[in-house]
Length: 459
Image 1: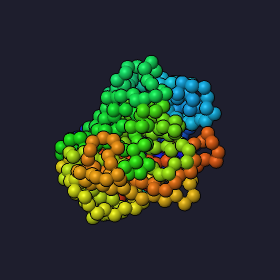
Image 2 (image 1 turned 180 degrees about the vertical axis):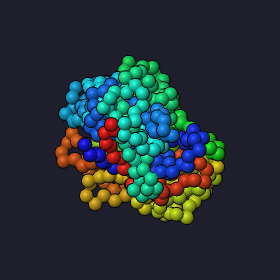
Image 3 (image 1 turned 90 degrees about the horizontal axis):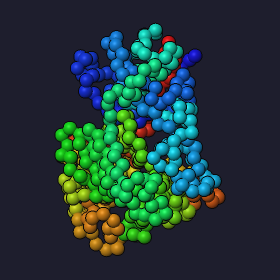
Image 4 (image 1 turned 120 degrees about the vertical axis):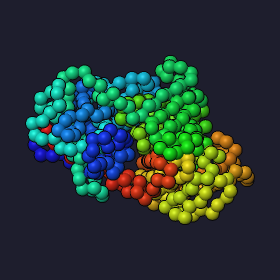
C-alpha cells in the first residue's frame, strides 16, 4: 500500500533530552517545536478498533526505540440538545465527547474514523529500517508518520504508531499540559446551572511556557507567560466580547449569566480541550480552546440570529505596561502604558505583544461564507478611559493595550435552526514566546502552512 498523504498539524514542545544525544537538531520538526501532529482515525487504518489506551507512539533514535506521548481524543456526531441535557434540537455537530458532561462518552469506545490522534512533531526523529519494531506491539499494526515542512528545512522526520500488547501509559510518563476544570459549585452534571448562570469557576491551564485562568464559561481572565526568561506576571485583564465599544448589553458577562453548557473538559498528555456553548440569544454559539505546551487555539463558532456587529479582543492588565504592541496593520508598534496612541486599524492577520513579561504572538483567521463581509481592528490604550465609547463593560476600570478584530457591520443569521443561515468562525492562535521572540509574520506563515504528514504501513 502506498503512502496516504495529508496536510495537517499545529504546534509542539520540549527539546530537552534530545540535545544530550549529541545529535544536531536538524529537520522540520525541530524548527517548529510549537506544532503538533493531529490525524483522524480514518488515516490510520491499522489502528482502527484499538482501545485508545492500547495505542502507543515511538521514535527511532540511535538505533533504539523511545516511547513518546500520544493522545486519542474521541469524537462523535451529537445533537446540540444533548449538550443541554434536553430533547433533540434537530441540529447536529461532530465534536469531542466527554463522560463528565451531558455529551457523554463516544458510543464507539475504540478508535474509530472520526476520532483524533494527537502527538507533538518535535517527538519525531529518524526513519526506522524495515523490519525494526519496538517490543510488545501487535504484529502488522505499525503506522509510519513522515513529517515534512514545505516552507522550511527539507529534512523529514518520522514517528511511529502501534497497538501494544502490554499496558504501557500512552503518555510515556509525561504531560505537556495540565488543565484543572474547577467548577466552584461542585460536580458538573449535578450542579451546573444550564438555564441561568453564572457558574463561577477557578479553572487553570498550566504548561512550562504559560498559564491561563478562567472564572466562568466565557471569562478568560488570567495569562502568564512562563517561558524561559519571562517575568511570569499576569498580563491579561479579560478576553472580551462586545457588539461595539462601550455597548454593555452584550458581553462575556451576559453570556455567562444566560443559558450555557460545556461540551468537553479534557486534560491529556499532549493537549487539553475546553469547549462550551451558550451566549445569550445564541445558545448554540460556542468557543473551543485547545491547549498545547507552547500554543493555544481559540475557535469561536458564531451561531446566532442576525446581529449588528461583534468584537473579540484582549484587554491587558496594568502588569503589561512596558510591552510593545504590533500588528500587520501597524508595524511601527506602540508601547502599552495606559497613554493613548495612534494605531492604524485594518483587517489584521496577526498581533504581538512583547517585553520582559514574555512574548505573545497572536494569529487571527476569520472564515465565513457571508458575502462581502469586511472587518477592521480595535485598539485602546488608556488608563483613564472616558466617554460612552470607552466604558469598560467588564473587568477592571482600565484599558491597557486593548486590541483585536472587530466586525463593525451587520452579520446575517448564523443560527442553523433557521434558514437561510451563514457560517462564521473566528480562530485565534496564540504562541507563547521567550521575551523578545514574538514574531507575527513567522507565526502567521506557520498557521497558513501546517506541517505535512504522510502515513504509510511500517512492516
